[in-house]
Length: 165
Image 1 (cartoon, helix red, strand yellow):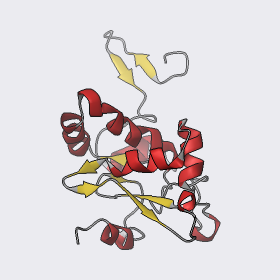
Image 2 (cartoon, one colour; image 1 turned 90 degrees about the horizontal axis):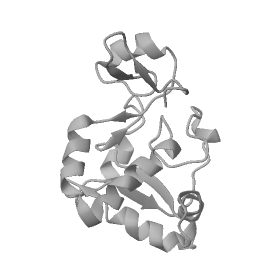
Image 3 (tube, rainbow, N blue to C red; image 1 turned 90 degrees about the vertical axis):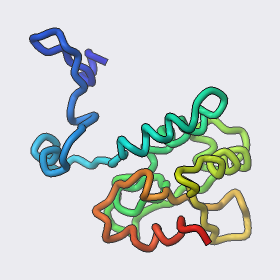
């Protein structure tokens, strides 16, 4: 971690995380450190509550949130092959089968079941939409109340999907 510059030891001997990898603080201050770098917001309060909820046997469900993070599009909060794409017409959504392969699941159905089991404050963390009849081709959206990557203008429609009926 130190060789890669992720962790650094300061002159007092304290170990610090490189702020371009993990930053805690106001977004305006982060932009001074990271410039135009892409990032995903993960709410501390939410993560603490999730950690308290998922322990022991269910800790794998919390791990799914972290495993999916690299595939979340920064602007649209959907799981895709090109997470840094800004143009909505060029975003390539990932199917549950694609994500299952990337995460080491032998069957997309196992991953779908696991993702459906992850909840926060009574809401699912992951939602699904279908454009075809094949269930393995479901696409995945992430609840922006848990993981929030974009500026907000593009997420209002997605938030509706996660409201209780």
